[in-house]
Amino acid sequence: MLNSLGSNHTPLDAAIIDLDGTMVDTLGDFAEALNRMLRDLALPALAAARIEPMVGKGSEHLLRSVLQHVLGQAGQAPTAVEVEALYPRAWERYQHHYLAINGQYARLYPGVAEGLQALKGAGLRLACLTNKPTAFALPLLRAKGLDGFFEHVFGGDAFERKKPDPLPLLKTCAALGTAPARTLMVGDSSNDAQAARAAGCPVVLTTYGYNHGQPVTAVDADGWVDSLMQLVPASVAEDIQ
Image (cartoon, rainbow, N blue to C red):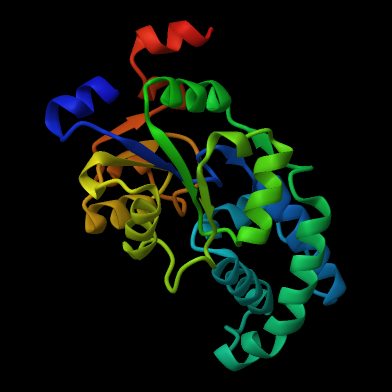
């Protein structure tokens, strides 16, 4: 994949890797923490399959989407005022529960650690950029043994705006000291692709993960992979196996 990107783009110096849905399947964590929060608020539980399309735009968006859906189950759409009235308590309980279970109901996607090692073996500098709050992202990376791969880890609260805005990618490129055109964005959703396009970064998306319930291959990207191992030349991948 890096070879094919190199034939169409400026050579790459670095890669920015998304977290949820790209490296770690965190849907189990989301469902557990959200349902514990809903129980605290005396609200009905929500199935993981219903939560999945809401993932990817940051915890604040996820929480508001869940509240909107649960409050609307009675048949009448809740007002923004009703959602916001519950939000502070919901956010406090969600943070409490998420930090308590962070990583316990999550799993690495196959080939992630090997793919990251191979990317470093190919000479790329790595940063993790996620819409997940930094206080959630850092412990999760440590729990899954991934923190040592990255020079920088930036959460959704690290900058003034989140993906799909290009600002986080541009700030991450600046932290790495690399040009956007020479920095690959690897993600799982239209958020990652839109941010990369606007920032001037090439972008590759995983075929698994969370794309708001839409087929990821319909998103404008430079390529798609079934595993992070597919990003690196076969010769590099063979060296680490």
